[in-house]
Each structure stands twice: as structure tokens, then as C-alpha cells.
Length: 149
Image (cartoon, rainbow, N blue to C red; front, top):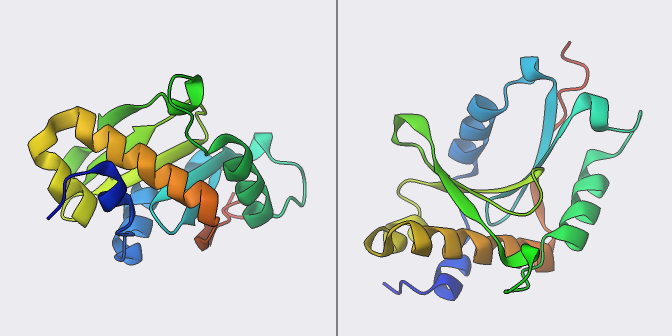
């Protein structure tokens, strides 16, 4: 199993049900948030007050990721930090935009290969997945909670 960030990014998260469950745990509807999940685990989210009335979430997420998702090392677009999730769920890899996160679940290929490399490898793999999602722009789930409350 390779531990390079590029190899891990090539292995998309396939357990979307677990990813969706984890994101709903992180961003429950009662917090007035909606979100969009991309193939490799990148998540774009909004507080409802920040959304234009009637906005198409999928289109808005694709545009945001197209503009702010690419990675340019040595710039703010290459910056990241990681946050460990409670209950041994995995990690969030953050970037220069608060609205864009990459979810890495415990047990998925990238996280398993990163465990020997510590936080830096986990962050690099998450950043690489964000870059891949920004190139492919394939949405796997839209969670529109605007009508919940």
C-alpha cells in the first residue's frame, strides 16, 4: 500500500453512507447549515444566512470548489490543518476557506496509509483529495436543510 498523498487521493471514499452520517453529526440541520459532498470527501458547507435565497447548492458548491479548491503550494491555497473527530470517526482537513473541508474517515484507504506518517501525511492526503475534487467536480450528495427550521 502506497503512502504517497497522490496515491491516496486516487482512492476515493466509497462509503458515502458513513461519510454522510458523519457530516450530519458534524453539521446537524438544527444548526441551520446545508452542505455538498464531492467524490473524494471534500465538503462545501454554508450557514443558511450566507446563502442567496433560492440558491442552487450543487452549482454554488461546484463554483466555490472550482475557484478555491485547487492547491498551490507556497500560497494560502496550499495551507491546511487537521482536526481529529470525536468518537474515533476520523479527521477533517481544513484549508484557507472555512467553507471547504475534506473528511477522512477511519478505515478508508488514505487514512490507513497515512497513519504511519502522522498528522503531516494525513493533511497532505486530505489536501490532495481536495485538489482532485476541485479538478473532477463530481458531487455525490447534496444536503439541503434550508426548509428544516
